[in-house]
Image (cartoon, rainbow, N blue to C red; front, side):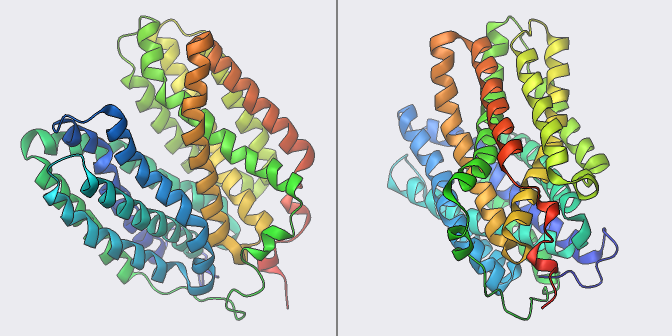
Length: 397
């Protein structure tokens, strides 16, 4: 897929698609506080975890399947399909009056719509930016997600306190309709003449399993480390006698946003692996520093450094996988990257939680750092540099 006339990065269609992604993310992020609603019905925590977790499980499962459809039919059609699923499903949350089968079914349906629409909208945005600045496009798209990820729960908390769950669902639908309007106003993307043929899932069969495992390990470990850093920092801070950990999350997000704006295209100019290595080493070093934190100022510093590493590695690593699989398989590549990252988040939390139970939080962060260091070393030694071969997207027929 090409971005015709996409010489200007901040073009109208890119901004419309980006706004659509932001509103979509806002709608879904409101449900981060849905456990507060479920808790009023008195269920077991495991039941709440099941209802919330099925959303991610379904999203992970469907992304690779619809990723190929994005490459064949275009991101806009698939994004609209996912949005329609969400728009139809969310109003039924008004009928939730227990923690039984209905919220479980609805969370599964919203996971389906989210997995489809998120992947397709990201592909849309990246297609509408300049081809030669793909990493910057991915970084800016990630910024929209970071901002929505921060604002959504804050807004949801105020809605639940002042208006109740019903308005949480209503405002979620309003955000979905805003996303729908933005995507409908965005122009169709011109597809390649071959209609997306000659690639897809079949390309995965051509990759040796050992090389596939090496490349896949990076987003998996990146997700696992992100989970260990984010999910356990509050309880770690309390155990270290630090009463307030909110500044950590604030500076983490700010650093990630600033880095993507200022250095989001660094791997476009310097090469993917050239950026992945120092970004990973920043995260590794920061994990060892976190293990020594005993005061709020140092915790805030680690939040900033962690955000810096995150801001560098996401656009470089995601575009590495796109380049590796070929630009004509961008939808598949994005879906695989997101699914692998989420798998890492899902597996890393219980794994590193078990490590913390056995050895404490400080050793948990040290071991997490060693795991990412080992994965990065293998990746740098075995994974090919995508700059050596022109991506098939650019090859002349």
